[in-house]
Amino acid sequence: MKRSCLLILVGLCSLATQAQVKVASGQIISFANFKSKFVDARNVDVWLPEHYNPQKKYAVLYMHDGQMLFDSSATWNHQEWGVDECFTKNASALPNTIVVGVWNSGKHRHVDYFPQKPYESLTQEEQARIAAYVRNDAALFADGIRSDNYLKFLVMELKPFIDSAFATYKDASHTAIAGSSMGGLISMYAICEYPLVFGSAACLSTHWPGIFTIDRNPIPNAFASYLKTHMPDPKTHKLYFDYGTKTLDSLYEPYQHIIDGVMQQGGYTHKNWMTMKFENEDHSEKAWRKRIFIPLHFILN
Image 1: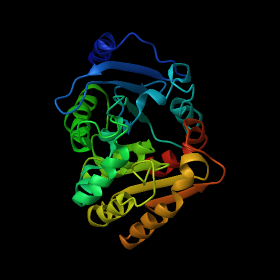
Image 2: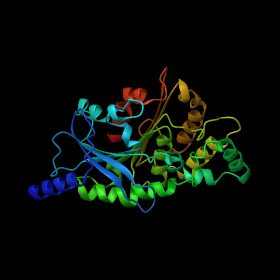
Image 3: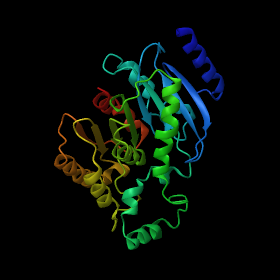
Image 4: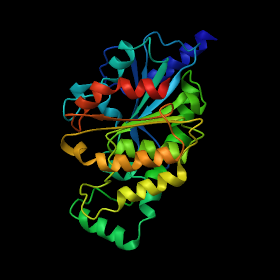
């Protein structure tokens, strides 16, 4: 049995892209241009912890913006989350976990990650005002909002593949999702839309404005209204939010306070929900790297 599992893993490695993602520990198996009938093909990096054993079972953490997680030498800003270092350094405090780094698709990142149902709840006048604001940035809402299809890709295509290829626990209590900025929004949306798939979500520097202005912006209220009616059961789910106080993060505090009120009204307590403020931290992988252990420890344990 063990030999057959190892042969499967060797076969998977042979299908992986040869572009090496450098990690400090563990192993990356990269799948280039993972095909989907729902969204653009994209790379997927699967991080296996040191001494990965196919005879054991592992929790799974799905993370957005996968190209920013492991290797700063290959990122546009030479920063990374340091996810492999975090898991290895804190191995005694975190459960055995496989990390699935799902790359963004580039020009469609924003519309893949923008929660679709809250956007569609806006009036035509509100949508037109947003469209007018972003008209000079055609990529921002190119081809319409696509986040429902992005989640279908994760749930109906990628997760079944990961569960068949690796030694995973398949249930929601061992399946988490995480991201920052727009990745924070889509993580919140994922656990609300698929509460039977994802048991916890970490939303760092959640981009509540949705676009890049707060002037007459109806989007944050739409997110709050959506969460009120789609909140996952606090008895079986965990949610983490945070924000800094510099650069783009400086916009988030008043909106996060509104979301915190929604969480309290929905029955969430310190046992299953955490919001943290990080003074003097900005909107960057460098900042998220400093604190990534906190959300991982909270949502995975």
